Length: 348
Image (cartoon, rainbow, N blue to C red; front, side):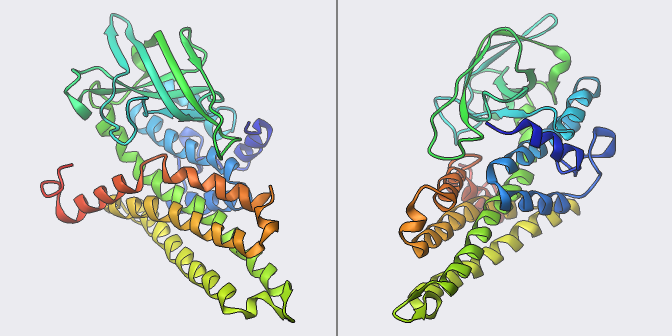
């Protein structure tokens, strides 16, 4: 479980969603500055940095698409480290086909009634509120029939479960079950039937943050490994003297630095209101794979000491999940292709 005391300390220091306007509890910093803070926290602990990731993604959604009277108190709690928000998009029948939702959101006189299930939701059992995407349009309306709602986690009819995942265990993933959950009308985020189209634009930001997050872990692994191979000797020489040891590390060091610069570029483009969807998608598919491969090589360089239960093998397990969640490599490459060739040339 995530440490709520530490989360509040981070909030007091202004580390959570610092890119939000001061009126919403942020520091009014740019996305690039927020990314640098995010990666430094991830260097120390990837799980704790998930607090920043969720806050930046959800904070952007609330501040841009919500009723200030409703979202304002949540944003202040979020930036102070007093609340954790989850985002619920994935459903049991599919993840990559994100707009093909079946969770039903029905309009009633004073709001909405929600029925259905969400699954593989990060921090599902820890969140204080959830941004939920559900279908208000017809089943064949695709992305243009989806509405987003802010749902407090303590509402009647909402139950939660927790999975036994391979990595990111402090964060946890699980399912959310909605049974006639009533949500007030003013808790809607964005326009009815337009929630998916409006809110998905914010994922470019989080994809660049994820890139920095996992690369920070890879950088920490590389630093420790370089120190180790410079000190550990075999056949009368430091391990670093053997090209079979040092050259793979040099290769990964080069690529990690290059990928980091790509992530920073994507955030710079966002700060300057320039197109950055392709760059963000590059960050999301490349960085998690590169981080995993880098840490794998670092683990091998440590030999049996790396394979033991410890920080290196935990890093390997933790970064692996980012190749699955928040958009697979295949989806990201489709986004890049559409940006370059046009959506008409890459319809699906």
